[in-house]
Image (cartoon, rainbow, N blue to C red; front, side, top):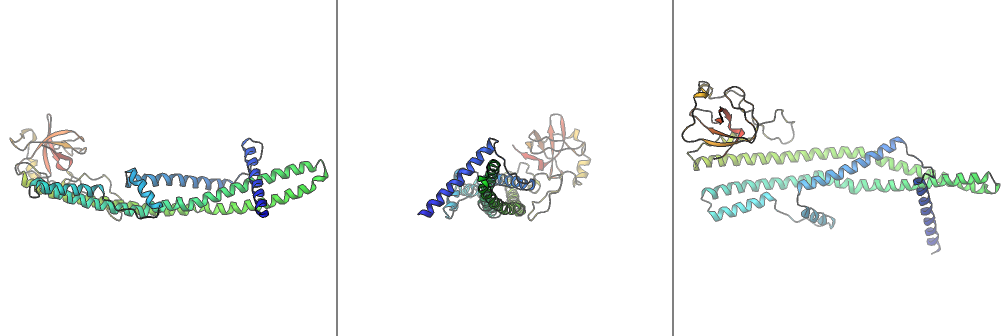
Length: 382
């Protein structure tokens, strides 16, 4: 009991001494031991890493699960060390509704058949999304959380200890200074000076030891960056795989719908399903583990129907009595020559096909302007 009381009194004295030193520093009445520039840079780098890791972690969680209520629920399950219940993705739920609707409308009807096809694709997209979320959580989110909940907590704890050691050191310096000032007036204070010098040596040793421990932990932030860089590459690869799968699934669906649409509407023009992908980027993307197919540039390669269209005078071309349609332009398009019509995204034009034309091209009209336009840049409407 006596030992505990003594320890409690000693701890209270240390706490009071630190509080006095801290207050006097804030008031500019006491000197403060400054850390070297390299150490300060390490502290700034660590704080920057912690702040941006928190933001990236949070926003990635929002990307993978936009519903805040579900995120809170998953967080609680994780803290309780319980398995998170399996949930259907939005794509899988949409697929379920489409299949049920197709069964009600009749799976043999054109609308029912299309609902079944689209529903199956949505189910595959939902499965790909689930795989992406699982991969991103394991390979990217977990390492970020482990840093914040493990390494960073250790660093924060050692930094608090270092700050206390610094306050103790500066308090000892202040006591020694006062003891020496009193010694100059009376020799009775010589014992106090000796005691203060001993306390200062002990405090300096403790501070130096703690500073070295903290320095080593802070220098480990560079290794953390290397680890997070590797995790970031894995996240990009899994995201690329996810979008590549989605692209392929939709391309397959587009081909199916294109062929079935031709059967249902034989009197109307149907563009080539294989060529209705978005225009490629001007530069080739870097090679990764999974890549999205890049469609060759439309309209720049030699046209198979050049012989037919080369002899075609656009001024003499008249719209056919049937087959004229409206189309919305999806992307800007720069005409390669005078036979083509330049396009602006989101504008509406009239299009139609002529006998012998390449199926990847249509004749487009906008007011008094007329020229060939690529099907891949259009959304055909009525």
